[in-house]
Length: 136
Image 1 (cartoon, rainbow, N blue to C red):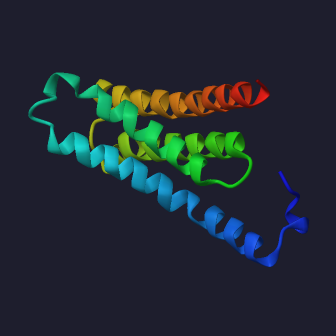
Image 2 (cartoon, rainbow, N blue to C red):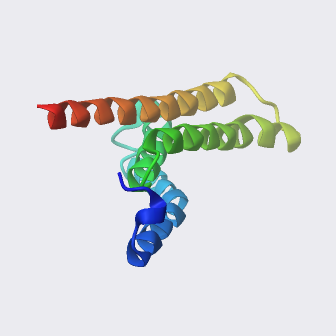
């Protein structure tokens, strides 16, 4: 990959635009998976946990896919962001609101954390697969 100082002004501005789009793209990926699962919630009721697993996968994978460089580092930082948001949403927020925090809250937070880690793993495996294909 070309060092950033050797890029043309047009390429630099495209790279900056892609970095700016990382977080909105990640949020859009998360929202899309969440929306689809809410649409089919009656049909997929026995698979309720998939929403908590796949939404963070989409958050991490979509955001890192948009990043122009350092995709693995971006995936790790997005997974930490997702984990923080998950803990705020399921544990800290309800606790500060005076509500009882129980097993359900921890299960949901744990599933979202596992989904974020799965997103990083998926990105790393995809990167290895594509680098193996280019080596041949």
